[in-house]
Image 1 (spheres, rainbow, N blue to C red):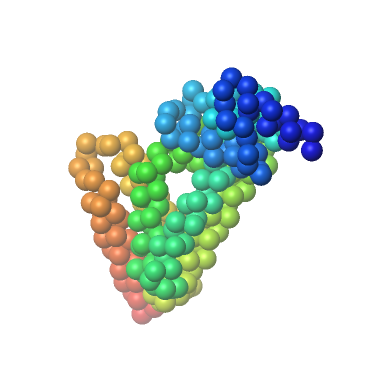
Image 2 (cartoon, helix red, strand yellow):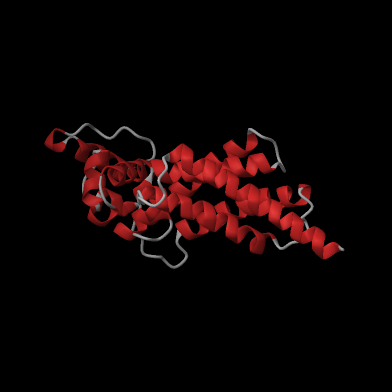
Length: 220
């Protein structure tokens, strides 16, 4: 109780608005996410997040051991948002449909394009890997949700006997690669978001078509 009151009081110093949120941890994650969107992960500081949230510079350490722990939590929140986006896109086409799986991949590419710094943070390019970190755990759940969607599609496409992890690796690499190339504005890509999403669509359909042909040939 006393800690929460001191956070509010600290927010009044220096003309900052008082802290009125009910969840300081979530507010700090939101503040850090906003700062990362507007800059670079490498220059991010906990003190900046505290100022953004309107609390004292020491307040974040009641919830996060250090800068790495806060960034780990930001990355975990990013995975939850990515999972929500891809699941919503898939749901528009129904479970077990190739169209739904492709839509989820297109949503993945769009998320990367909209959140480039967060995307790099989530996948470890700018984040230390903490032992038992929450981002690793949340990322694993996001991947498990992808595998579950993929298994439904594989079954409907006559590919249910294939290992979903082995089958899904090229699909994931393709979508992730398209997102990375789009973020990096590769001149060799020569396409905007919609163009890249269309490439992902065609590539996924070609992969499934080729896999079905292989499966039919093996069954003969």
